[in-house]
Image (tube, rainbow, N blue to C red; front, side):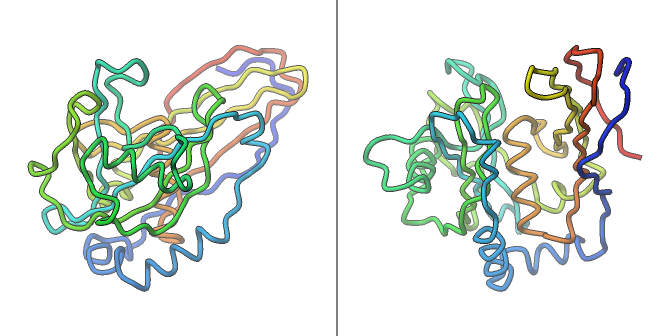
Length: 257
């Protein structure tokens, strides 16, 4: 619980709704259409990164969000990282990694990493654009999600690098956008000399072979906002604790009513 809070300022809070327009039939017919692609590209072109969120980040990385058709359903492909890796072992992820010399740009970084991890040739990928960069949990790396379409696939036919990936799985976009399969976790950042403590929520997506959380969930959330726009409105809540006497860092799940 949050203790001894004088008052709170809510920056933004949007309630979640699930419109009939986001039914499976609408998604199947429209989400990967040329019209929706053009609309999504315009949205991504108009969004600019928040400089304050990226301040101090010294490294750049990219992940590809592979949109695909699996069993006739528009879906998103995820990987499960190998337990032999030094970082993020055994976690749900998107194919990606750090920028390297020789990469033409950050999109090329994501495409190169996707080829290395799940053997998808860059020439076969339809890149839609870039989402806003996301700071990693160490707050030293700026991670840019690259939205791309890899077409129709059969999961058991996708070859993946077993030294980096344990398995792959997909989740239909209709499931990801359904509030019945979405949860949120609330975190609290302690106060620093330059700012008060604050709380924020992060999405957790269920409905697949593995729970999607962390940076991958944030990227998925941003992807759904672009693909479905006004039809997908997640709950976003950040609360600043003014003159809070407690600086404990706490975490608790947030249930949706």
